Image (cartoon, rainbow, N blue to C red; front, side, top):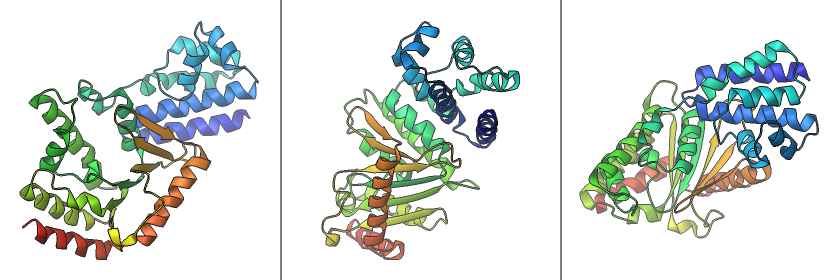
Length: 302
């Protein structure tokens, strides 16, 4: 058992060294470690919370990686869980400062909802992102002008400065996908997206040209789910699936709502969404045919 935890810890450290989204993911991985240790000892969240002078709800948030870690709390929990090996204890405690570090997106905290900050951290760490959109071009593929038109629709944007900040952050998120060793992005866009002229014809022309350019990149696959397909199992709304380069972290399904978001990481949930995405990719026109469809829309907005 100790060997298993030591192996997981090394994977965690290696992953952190390679990932620009390390803090968010490391919190989740450390939380997973603490949950496993607690469950192996048969200790309830209530009893664990009592040990660190907190509620069972805080233990739950720690184990889900939703809060920062205090060294004293982790040290007390490790004692409760019977972790006596000094090397394992020191290694886990030594990672706390890295897990509590802030990502680049925290400087946008004034306009960034807390629930979306979690997603950005996961996005930064993902090696593969598959996304389906029904109303907008996916944020990772938006031009600045298109993004500005979309952001202006938000009633939470209080000023031009807020709008600029949100657009700048969206463009910053896109940088990883044009760098060496960029992650994989597979986007399926409902045809309805192309019929919505956000920002007017000129903005839409620039956006469609950008989609064509991005679709030529080796790490990006772009398909258009046409009306001719009829109904499909993703009719319920947009979603994204994030996959990470470590088996210690499961796939995460992200569903954004008006003022919150849902995250699923249980296999029975993520597998269903993965099957839906596979169906979309199979039934939608190929990337080559999708590029032709985009060119047809480009002519419409000329």
